[in-house]
Image 1 (tube, rainbow, N blue to C red):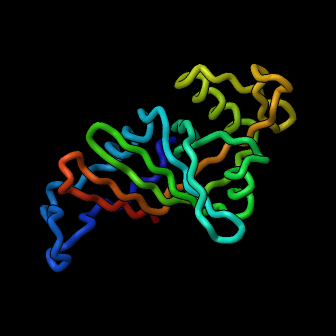
Image 2 (spheres, rainbow, N blue to C red):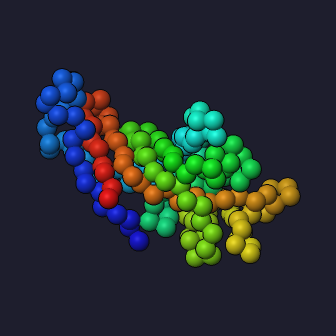
Amino acid sequence: MTGPTPLAELLFGEADATPMSTDATTVKPWSQARACLDAAPKAWLSTVRPDGRPHTMPVMPVWADGAPCLATRPASRKGRNLAGNPHTVLAVSGADLDLALEGIATRLRDPGPLREVAGAFLAKYGWRFEIRDGAVFDDGLPGSPEYAFYRVTPVRAYGYGADGLTATRWRFS
């Protein structure tokens, strides 16, 4: 599954009076944004605390189940935030693109997607997870702590080129 193909468009228009490019040929393809996410060793995940304040922490993203996915402990601040409010931003910086992806995080519970995400973590980071009774565990750590896998379904994303002058917005339907 490759995921949805979003509408790509210039982020700024002529009337915005900004130094950003308004040349439609500078619009970046979603494949470039996806490659940036897929290659990133680390991303920044922003979540919303119960009182509305933002919370940002680094995560190790993988591309699986047709979207960016992440792992966190359910009792961590970001895990509790996602359980209460699934709206999130995932941000990465690549060699040719900086990306901010707004999305909805959904905790994965079905065995198929759990295995797919676990396989992606093993392939990308060598991080081995075990799936038992619909739950995810890291048996390599003392006490075999439980983790949760989240799939971030993109709503919109913003990409900024390395030149500092090009910007693309992707809108997902």
